[in-house]
Length: 254
Image (cartoon, rainbow, N blue to C red; front, side, top):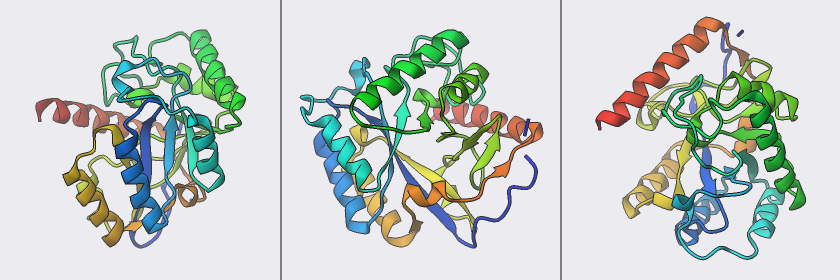
C-alpha cells in the first residue's frame, strides 16, 4: 500500500489534456473543432478509445469508416492512446476504490470476468495496430480486482486519481485528474489532467478551453508520462477516497 512524499513536479501548475469516449460514431464535428484547437497550440492529448462500444449514449452520428486508421495516425503523431474500458456499458452499481460515480463497467465484477474484458479490449485494439499500456476506466470506476487484472494483462498505468502529480499504488502508476479544474489552475505547482468530453462541449466551453490553452502551461500527455512518480501510502489513498466521495455528492447537488 502506498504515499510518502509526492516529490517535486515544478514551480508552475501544468495541465495535461484527456479526451474521453473516443468511438467511431461520436460527434465528429465537435471533436474535430477541439482537435484543431489542440493542434493550433501544439498540444498532444491522451485519448480514451472504447474498443467495442455498446453504449448508445456515445453514438452521436454516422460511424466514421476510417476510425481505426485515424486513431493509429494520431498515435503516430504523438497522441497517447488509453484503452477506455471494453464496451462502456455500466452493469454495476458500484463506485469501487475511486467512487466519483456509483455505477461502473468494471468495479463489482469478478476478477476472472474483468480479466477477460481487459483481454478482449486489448485484442481489439491490437487487431487495428493500436498498442497501449494505459487504462481509462469508464465512469472513473475501478476496484482492486481491476488493478489486479490490469497488472496481469500488462497495463502499467491509469489516468485517474487525485494528487499533485503521478503516483505509484498497488503496482501501477496513476496519472491524476483535477478535482476541480478552476482550483487546479490557481495552484503554484504540480501537474494534473483536464478531462474533456467532446461529445458535449458547448461554444462557451470551447472559449474557456482556448483561454486555458493560451494562458496556462498546458503540456502534451507524453510529457506527463515522463514525470517522476511518487509513492502513495494507505493514508494517502484514504484521503483520495474521501475526496472522491465529496466530489460525487457535490456533483449530485449542483
